[in-house]
Amino acid sequence: MSHIRVRTAAVAVLLAPLAACSSAGSSGAAAGDAKGGGTSTVEDRPATVTVTPKGNGVRAGGTVKVTAAGGTLTSVGVTDDEGRPLSGKVSADGVTWVSTRKAVPGTSYTVTAATTTEAGTKNTVTSRFATAEADKINRVDWRPGAKAIVGIAQPVSLVFDNPVADKAAVERQLKLTTSNATEGSWAWLEDWTGRDRIDWRPKEYWKPGTKVRLSAELNGTDSGDGGWFVRDYSTSFTIGASRIVKVDLDRKQLTLEQDGQTVRTIPVSGGTPGGDRRSWRGTAVLMAKEGTINMNSETVGLGDAYDKMVDQSMRLTWSGMYAHAAPWNDKWFGNANKSSGCIGMSDTNAAWLYAQLRPGDPFEINGRDTKGVVAPGNGFGDWNVPWAEWRAKSALR
Image 1 (cartoon, rainbow, N blue to C red):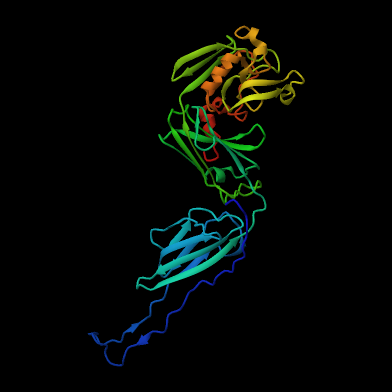
Image 2 (cartoon, rainbow, N blue to C red):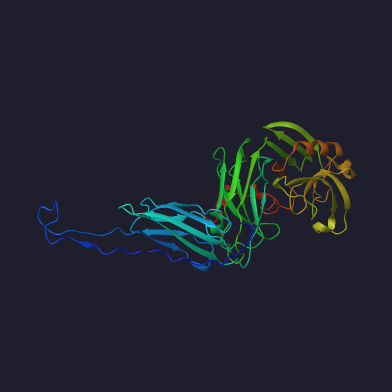
């Protein structure tokens, strides 16, 4: 839930009423008793109900359990202080009900349990408890956004505001489903910002047309020292056409392929060899189409080398590698790598490429003289991790 509030609630006394005394038979044989023995009957007792947790200020993050003794549960309802239900399931024998979601911080809950006995005696018990406030809250930033159409290399990525100590507990709450049972895995990474991050990527590039849904049922989950999650997150998106950008820095050219067919090859100029201005290699994923932006070399550790407005900017890494229009380098397109690390091209070619692509499209970059392979946390460098190594980064393996 998006707010935190504790409403003091009195804990109702759980009812366990006792039956009346039994009645003795007459001194004579009871009617229908062939042996003439006396009979006694005991009035049926209502079932006893126990609810855990109970009281005020209890620790959040646990499940709610309702147990019947001397009968079975016919219905159980658990609602928070705003009337929202906490779902759960009754055991096969009808004796126990356990919530499928966790009690969240700073919330009052009302539990109503109805029971019946074998003899048909019915009873309803109401109980209340309240959880303690969260001392710290953890939040999530996630990609891609809801209802987006993305390229075949787009991972699902969640970055956490605070450190996640209990990674397994968090990962268990992440449910990713696809329309075609795509094989994939979660992996824990360090984001470029230094924060904890978990990404899900397929074993291979997505199949075009795949529909993907993420349900992150984190509300009530304790991430450790980083604090509690106090809301759920969800997103759904669709995989678009298969487009792959192949960049050959040795030949100084870029080729766009769609559905395995070459659409166009254009001359480019990559990062200057021999130093910090080299480009990255490996697979980078188009993170965003940012259009016209200011690029300042001081923000990427290159001193005062440049400070200019740049058109058709397509971000490839957090560290500042873009594909973009670079008309000031026109004499080098197809001839030499003379940029400060980006992949530059003419205004016309940049405008054309910008119009073709969408976030999630992969750039497969090759070249002998580069700074190295794009790291997983530097944008979406997930595809540079071998599959077996990627799967091993899950906290549940």
